[in-house]
Structure formats: structure tokens, C-alpha cells
Length: 204
Picture 1 (spheres, rainbow, N blue to C red):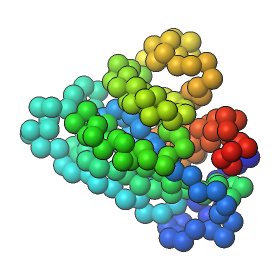
Picture 2 (cartoon, rainbow, N blue to C red; picture 1 turned 90 degrees about the vertical axis):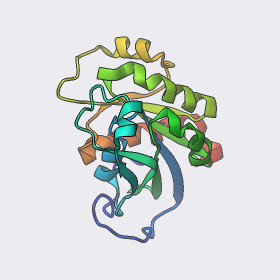
Picture 3 (cartoon, helix red, strand yellow; picture 1 turned 135 degrees about the vertical axis):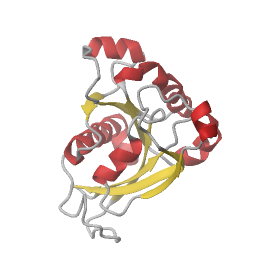
Picture 4 (tube, rainbow, N blue to C red; picture 1 turned 30 degrees about the horizontal axis):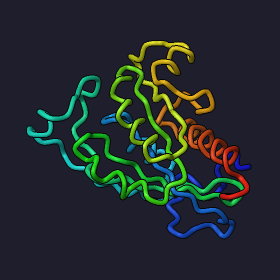
């Protein structure tokens, strides 16, 4: 199955689907506030990404926990959207979800029709990931975890992280730099390969 992006992906700005497109797949990019969802979609999208970002107000600063993301000045208030074409005719439609609890009511609508989720985790703020992981599991979506690396992230073993996140042994977990297209694509491929392994005859 697909192991690399097609030649039409990442940065061409082409609006139309490639002629080779065969499987169109909706994927959620989820995670807590400030974890890098918008950055990941920006790094891989072959079309100009759609963002619904607003500048953070004094009121939102009182509500949103800025620990570890003090430099953040904007936040997603609905969705981010991007698209990437993979080899083998697979096209991923990427829907970035807002990370704050107050946007929880949007989750069911955004998740409708998705085949899976890539959950970004900041290892400096592991506890912040629990609510999002719970939402994904309640929805019944298969998912992969991408550990978005930051310069001041502490090193942990894979076993420590899996136990902290209470991950099923079959759930993929990879390291990721959301700023880097190749690293972000590798994370998405880990999810795609997980979906294929779970449900190839019925879905693909």
C-alpha cells in the first residue's frame, strides 16, 4: 500500500484531485490545545490549507491552559482543513479539530464520516491528551498517536509513554516533528497502514 506521497503532493497548490485518485479518506488530526495540529496540516497539505483561527483574547487566556505554549497567540475555533495525495491513489482529507473543552460540542459533526484519527501528543503535557484520546475512543475511531517533539521535551521510553497514555498494544505510536513535511507524512502513513491492516476488505 501507499508508502510515500505522490509527486503531486505537498506544496504544489493544485486545486484539483490527481487523475490517479481512487480512495478518498477523511482523517481527523486531533490533540489538545497548542499541540501542533495546524502546523502539521500546513506542512503536508498540497492545497492551500483552510484555517479558522482567531487571535486569543484576554478572556480565552483565562480559560485556556497556556502551560508549555506561552508564545501561542492564535487558536483554532472550528476546523483546519488540508489535503494530501499518497501513492496508490489514496487521497487524505485532513480535518484538524479544536483542542479546547469548550469546543467539544463540534466533535460529533467534525468526526462524522472519518475513517481514523491521528492524535498528536506533547510529552511535556501528557495529561492534556487524555480528554482527546477519550473522545476518539468514544467515537470508535481507530487511531495512531504521533508524539510531536519540542526542544524541551523530556526523553521517555516507548513503554513509559504507552503506559502513561494507556494505549492498546496494537495502537501505532510514532515520533513526529509537525513542522517537517516528511516527518508528518510518516505519521499519517502509520495511521493509514493501521487502517488497512484492520479493515482492508471492507473499506479499501
